[in-house]
Length: 118
Image (cartoon, rainbow, N blue to C red):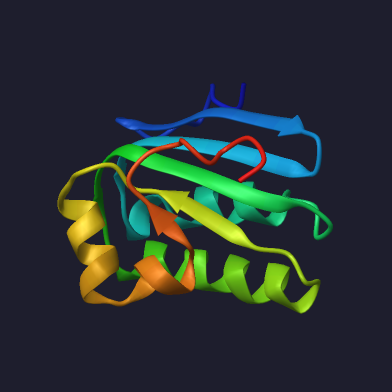
């Protein structure tokens, strides 16, 4: 569990779990410039030799600074031959990822059906 003191209001990193060769991160709340650094730290802690699944189904808002952090993680993992999958759900954030064409770059999907071995 990755949350606690210093957590920005309404912003939660609910769980970070290592399983096999996958690193799972679940985010909730509204993510923007004010908490970009927190997300940067969470992403920096991801080992380079793991594929990553980031579940943002419960993210109500994110801005371009947050999208930039996803792209940085994508580039870092890609340099190691790893991938990032983003679970978007059905939300305004999903539409944002689609508009920016990040849904294809980050192997985005609507739910976690492929989370374990897909």
